[in-house]
Image 1 (cartoon, rainbow, N blue to C red):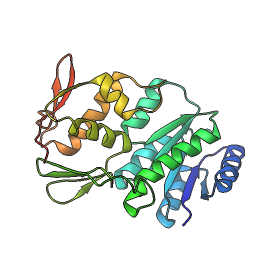
Image 2: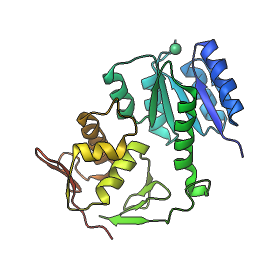
Image 3: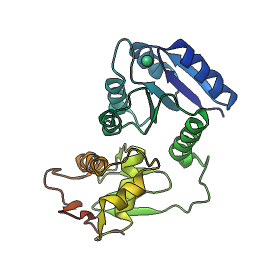
Length: 236
Ligand code: CA
């Protein structure tokens, strides 16, 4: 079954080139040129992933990404001409799964898209099906590494972005050990040009809001001053 990508881009030239390229790679495409069109499209069509330009005529892409993230775990790849580190951090902070700076290499974009779709779909057995299912349980939570899902003590599945999940997995795989920011950065980041220690702090703070009873006084992921972070729960 073909997967459908929603391209949100107001530059018609970029939009049509991208659509043609993605179709040639075997994807279905839906197009939107404004935030309004994007939201309408996301409501009416079954979309597997969103490619989102940050500079749109009606709304800022970051605001849109936040709106999507508030209601679904749909993979979002930000496409931006903005080069600033603060924009990239902001994109990951609001829950985008990946980003590429324009002009981008289409082959790299395809790889990143396939990577995200593979991860988000592998509960349907589409990929990574040779990986043995592994489930970590801690503090009432259950974390399914193969399905990339986290279920809270109330049995509710809580959306985690790819970066958040990979960070959680790195911590949970080494319970009660102090892990440095550099180590954790390595675990979450594929691209070497952007990561900073601050990214880890941002992701940790997002994760704490999801799993800690009081995120200001965390009990599961502990800050070890001057060293890094420690996963402070027993894993079964
Ligand atoms: Ca634009």
